[in-house]
Image 1 (spheres, rainbow, N blue to C red):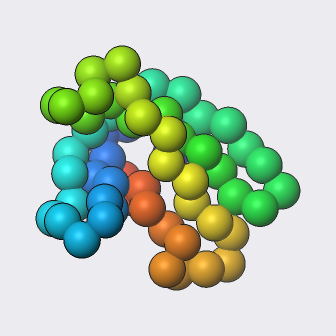
Image 2 (cartoon, rainbow, N blue to C red; image 1 turned 180 degrees about the vertical axis):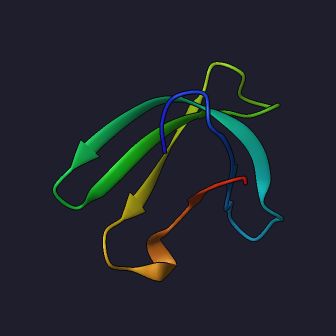
Length: 62
Protein backbone atom coordinates (compact mmCIF):
# COMPACT_ATOMS: atom_id res chain seq x y z
CA UNK A 1 0.00 0.00 0.00
CA UNK A 2 1.07 3.57 -0.60
CA UNK A 3 0.06 7.15 0.15
CA UNK A 4 -3.43 8.08 -1.13
CA UNK A 5 -4.62 4.44 -1.31
CA UNK A 6 -8.18 3.92 -0.09
CA UNK A 7 -8.22 1.40 2.75
CA UNK A 8 -10.35 -0.06 5.49
CA UNK A 9 -9.07 -0.44 9.04
CA UNK A 10 -10.01 -2.92 11.76
CA UNK A 11 -10.95 -1.22 15.02
CA UNK A 12 -11.65 -2.66 18.47
CA UNK A 13 -14.89 -4.62 18.25
CA UNK A 14 -16.54 -2.43 15.63
CA UNK A 15 -17.05 -2.66 11.89
CA UNK A 16 -14.16 -1.89 9.52
CA UNK A 17 -13.83 1.84 8.80
CA UNK A 18 -12.89 3.47 5.47
CA UNK A 19 -10.00 5.90 5.15
CA UNK A 20 -7.06 7.14 3.10
CA UNK A 21 -3.36 6.44 3.69
CA UNK A 22 -1.44 9.63 4.52
CA UNK A 23 1.99 8.11 5.32
CA UNK A 24 3.76 4.74 5.41
CA UNK A 25 6.65 3.72 7.71
CA UNK A 26 8.34 0.31 7.37
CA UNK A 27 9.83 -1.51 10.37
CA UNK A 28 11.40 -4.95 10.87
CA UNK A 29 8.20 -6.24 12.52
CA UNK A 30 5.77 -4.76 9.99
CA UNK A 31 4.45 -1.51 8.56
CA UNK A 32 2.81 1.53 10.17
CA UNK A 33 0.12 3.38 8.21
CA UNK A 34 -1.10 6.87 9.04
CA UNK A 35 -4.75 6.74 7.97
CA UNK A 36 -7.21 9.63 7.74
CA UNK A 37 -10.65 8.57 8.97
CA UNK A 38 -13.83 10.61 9.18
CA UNK A 39 -13.36 11.05 12.97
CA UNK A 40 -9.57 11.57 12.62
CA UNK A 41 -8.98 13.65 9.44
CA UNK A 42 -5.37 14.41 10.43
CA UNK A 43 -4.70 10.68 10.70
CA UNK A 44 -4.27 7.90 13.22
CA UNK A 45 -1.52 5.22 13.12
CA UNK A 46 -2.31 1.54 12.49
CA UNK A 47 0.27 -1.29 12.47
CA UNK A 48 0.31 -4.36 10.21
CA UNK A 49 2.48 -7.14 11.64
CA UNK A 50 4.50 -9.32 9.27
CA UNK A 51 3.40 -12.97 9.26
CA UNK A 52 0.47 -12.60 11.68
CA UNK A 53 -3.02 -12.55 10.13
CA UNK A 54 -4.52 -11.33 13.44
CA UNK A 55 -2.08 -8.41 13.32
CA UNK A 56 -3.32 -7.07 9.97
CA UNK A 57 -5.35 -3.93 10.67
CA UNK A 58 -5.12 -2.06 7.33
CA UNK A 59 -6.37 -3.51 4.04
CA UNK A 60 -6.48 -1.82 0.64
CA UNK A 61 -9.88 -1.33 -1.04
CA UNK A 62 -9.86 -2.62 -4.61
